[in-house]
Image 1 (cartoon, rainbow, N blue to C red):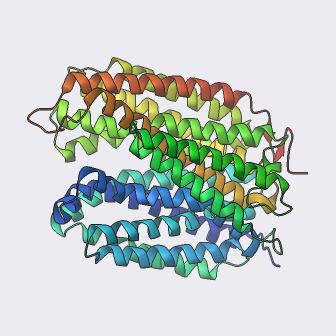
Image 2 (image 1 turned 180 degrees about the horizontal axis):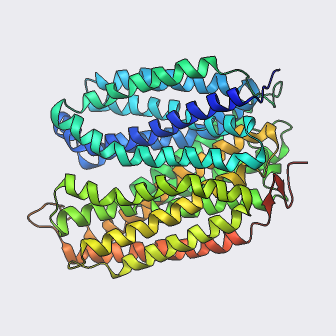
Length: 470
């Protein structure tokens, strides 16, 4: 097996990682803008419309770890290329979907392709960049993610307004073809776990358990949802027990045993996404229904956060190469906590300057946290576990996003009930009460995350304080 470590290979790997890191968030944020138009065309209910986005997240969460392991066994480049092909085909099918059901199925397929893409992109980068340079490369990919988040709503709204929502899915194809062309030319395959058996039982149990939990959160506070979550939790416990006994598990528990940096870095990522993802959703409703801004103007306000992330993430990545990643990430999460705490004072008379200041704080905090934390995770494991570690990192992100939305939707169900959200009769007081509770929960989560982040131990120059690198 050849693993060239030339500057040309590094540049090629960085290019496809940047393009693919831009693609997936651009896709998600542009589709979110188009969901009202999709709902009108297909006559979808609010719950069914929610699955246009949720189907993608669910598939990504289900398959990130299994595909990460397959990449370690059969080659990260191979799985990455397959992911681009599946994503491109699913995008084309979504553009011509004849019904809401088929669109949701194609979005699920997109999620599978997405899991193969961002479950291997970080692993490929970690394979070709040495520990002292990895943070800079990861910082650039994080910047590409937030650039996609910034551009997606604007481009999605523009395309939907002038061409129709179906053209959003078509717009991904040229970029996917460019990524595919460069990926196929990339030298090397990076399959450090080649020859190991793939754990089919573990993959099925993991995917089904996570599906039950995700469905349960989406159905709260209904009684069957609690049983689904409980069933999923039992399934995950069974999955952990199964993986401990297997010689070649899909998720090697040695990654967690005695490896405090890896375990707490993953936990910190889960907490951070759980505390931040739904903020944009809440502020979007606030700006449009309380402050009466148009969708276009609300989008311009909300873009302040991802712009700060895009600008500062490369700096944070380089900083984590020179100093302890846990310190940079912990400072970032502390700043995020301050931004979330500030939102507790949001009311119907709050100025746009105040809101922008809160978003800037959140953007700075998230930028200082994200790439250093990813650097800490990838520096805490052996090379042969890069694919699985990358998949776990992606899974913590998607699971945190679903959990964040689950908290908000549960609060809405309890406080707002079945009140219709319309411009004419928007329940401002009830909405603000539920938003304040959500921001309070998110602040506490983030403070708890700072403690976990600081407790992870040292990770510097690829030498964790303990665990699985051997």
